[in-house]
Length: 139
Image 1 (cartoon, rainbow, N blue to C red):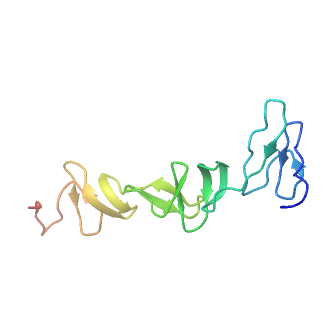
Image 2: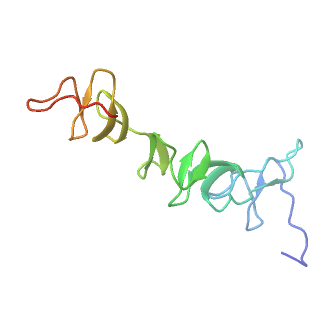
Image 3: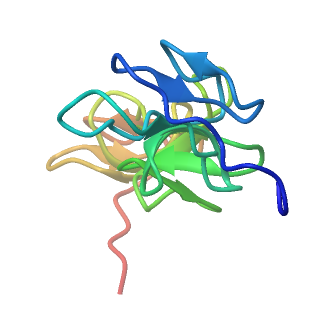
C-alpha cells in the first residue's frame, strides 16, 4: 500500500500475510520468510507464478498445471526416463517398464530389452522369438 503507514511487524515468531494480519502459519501459495532472531519481521511472500506451493522462492513443492515437479523445480517436460503423473501432484515419476525391459515409454511399451531378452512387436520382452520369427539385430 503506497502512501499509507508501513505494515505492522509481527512478533512472537508469527508471519505477516497479504491481508496485513499476523498469522502463525502462512496460507497456501505463500511461504514463511523466517523472522529475525528476536521473533520479529516474519512475512508470507507469494510463491513464484509457476509454483502452487513452495518452501521458498527457489524450492517448489507443487507446480501449477501444465508444469511438472522435478527436483523441486517446475518444468514443462519431465526428463528422459520419467513421466508426468497427474494423480500425484504432477510430479515427474520414474517410468514403470515391463518386466525385463531396459528402456520404455511406459508400462506397456518397451523400446529395448535387457540382455538375452528379445523385443516383441507388442512392446514386451521374451527370452526367445515366437514360432515363425527370427532374431534381427539392428545395423
